[in-house]
Image 1 (cartoon, one colour):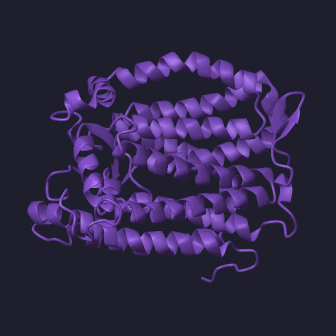
Image 2 (cartoon, rainbow, N blue to C red):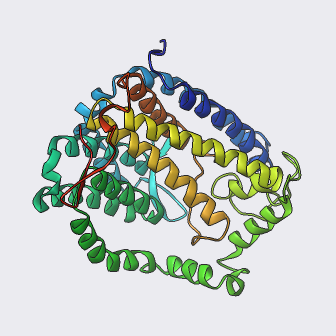
Length: 386
């Protein structure tokens, strides 16, 4: 299958492939010690990541060639499947549980988190619903219906429990409502009403409360619940400006738990230094920037919202992962897109990039497409015009 070439954003396509390739190298560097100890082979994680990387590239090309309107058209089906999967991992007695969290759907030969399907389906479904709603999103009744969709999805993810993903999904959903033209006053009222619920969700579980205390008083908890962040900061400090060299870091030798998943940013900082981290963050920034430009050039509102949703979600995951690794956010399990081990997470990320590429092939040739004037204000209210 050949890629469509007219107007295709080669920048985001090439950057995604480059990050995927670098991610394979980084997964091996950060995981070989753990793999050797637990599984008797240094390439245990590398082999699995490489296989899924091949699948991710294939799906990137496939999704880049499928008209994104197809996904929008059948997004209600995808949303329904996502809800069923989220319910399945919660109620099925034999659903795949890891470390007390029932998040994974196991098909025997492969496992994936139900929330990975849910977050993509939510973006597509909201893009359709908000595009259909048009200016009606300024009405309280219409806004409430869309909020119920976001709240239901976030709530089911929170019950797994998976607070970080529920937070990201909720924030992306609210952001889509905002750029669609929802009243800032209405959203502010909802935020004020939902804040107590967010606090309860954050502190309701004992382990989350302890993580929050460790975040607020890191020196008092560095030997217990704050141990991971303490070791992550040591790794970043060891790296200095230029790093110790790829593969030469020490924190992955059982000092830092989950070095190849939740704390790969620290491993990268130790081995590549500040300059290496800066270069990687620049590439992330480039991908997000190109994604936002694709949104601006999209031929319709559904395309705008879809491109914005996938771009903004990628940015949130990068920011949150970096914040946890640098002690600027409470400890939580957040993968770094493209670079953390987790093959199916990589696959779903590349599917999102493929959808962005397809939207770019349908961009209007002149100007900034339907969003040339960006967000406009009408009587103090915001809207994107399609």
